[in-house]
Image (cartoon, rainbow, N blue to C red; front, side, top):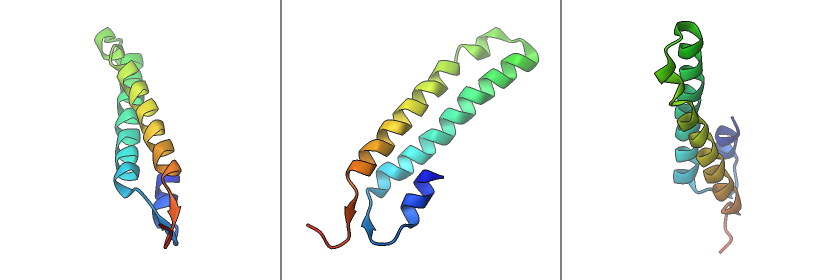
Length: 79
């Protein structure tokens, strides 16, 4: 949601590539993290729970990319 709001705000020069990457990584991280826990809790298959930290790590990476892109935001027309 935050990434989408930043993308539509007028008057800002945004590092769109970082924002897009952050959004994609958030979604993938959520799918891996929540999906693996859901599959594990419903089926009891233990190997699925092993990939849960990958999803959590992707969340951390996405937050870092979002922070970097927020630091790089400049008003339009500035040098």
